[in-house]
Amino acid sequence: MDLLQRFTHGEIDAFETLVHQFQGDIYAWTVRIVRDPCVAEDLTVETLWRIYRARHQFRSDGNFGAWARRIATNLAIDHLRRNRPEQSFAAEPAGVLRPDPLVQGEIHERIQQAFRRLPAKLQAAATLALVEELPYGEIASALGTSVGAAKVRVFRAVRILRKRLSQAGIRPE
Amino acid sequence: MKEHEDKYMSEHNDREIREALKQSFPPVNTELRRDVWPDILRKLDARQVGVPWYDWALVGLSAVMFLAFPRLALLFAYHL
Image 1 (cartoon, one colour):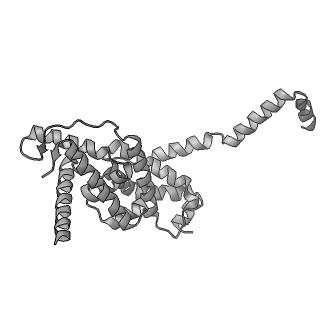
Image 2 (cartoon, helix red, strand yellow; image 1 turned 120 degrees about the vertical axis):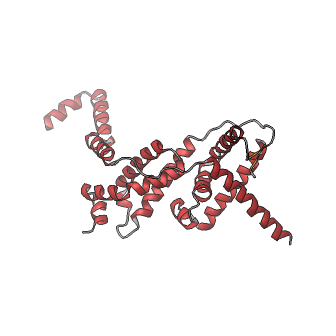
Image 3 (tube, one colour; image 1 turned 135 degrees about the vertical axis):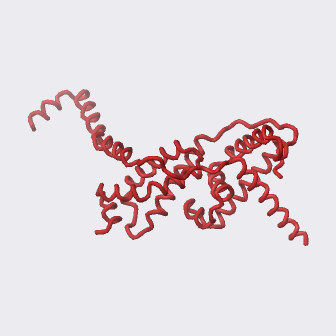
């Protein structure tokens, strides 16, 4: 019996091997979405725990890495949803991303705020596509959507973000 | 022509947003700092000690039955 079959039968040794094999990949994926190492560690544990509990649903001839990544993505999106800031920021005189470091720091903070207020699914897709610049195929597989749907999410995220930044008086250049 | 301009503007704007985001979100360290297996083991152990919900439901149901019909206890004892 191979490793994945032993895992689906609930063998702890097989699961331990898989944890050691995939924990790094799950963490790396999660931290790219949530951007917080401590939260990503907790979510990695939760992802592996969910994987163990859902072992009967896994087909032993399937792609374990892709399955694990999808579970990790769902948990990361849940986290973003739960921690999404509600308050909006007041409009201020127009700022352009440039020289003065102090002003720049504040503008970056406002961009982060605006980004974190995006719906969780859009935020995750946009982080992976625009900040991490990962291929859409990889993003779509982790989100459990088609490549087209992943692109639509990123497009919507950009449109909302642009609108909110312009309301806040920020003009990226 | 208009379509071409719109596409150019859209790509230009996307590039601006992309750059702004990349500047606002510094790269994260993707290296896991510790082995999480001990945490998983703790969760597994905690789960093994726990009593499943249907056992609690059975205990609750029995208690309600004995309170509502005390004579059932005698019948139950007789069958034991």
